[in-house]
Image (cartoon, rainbow, N blue to C red; front, top):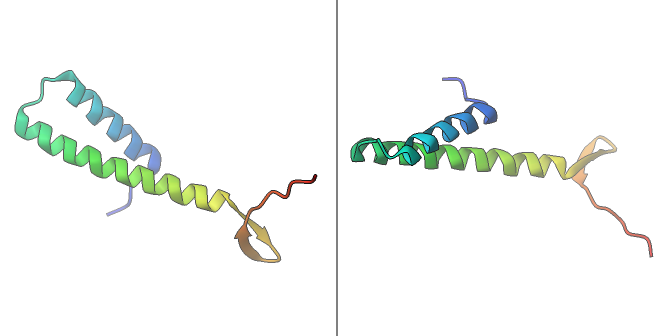
Length: 73
């Protein structure tokens, strides 16, 4: 099974939240949708953390290194 993109997971999460906020979901379905929403939220959070970590690194001499801003006094 192909992994969904961040954007697809986020859109699915938004749709689930709208359904749950509507209040017209039977309890059993609401529990399933809530569980699915929490799983999607975790996937999105993990992707964002991974992206942040990648952005905070720079390529230096062929190696990825932590990005640091040196302040001059």
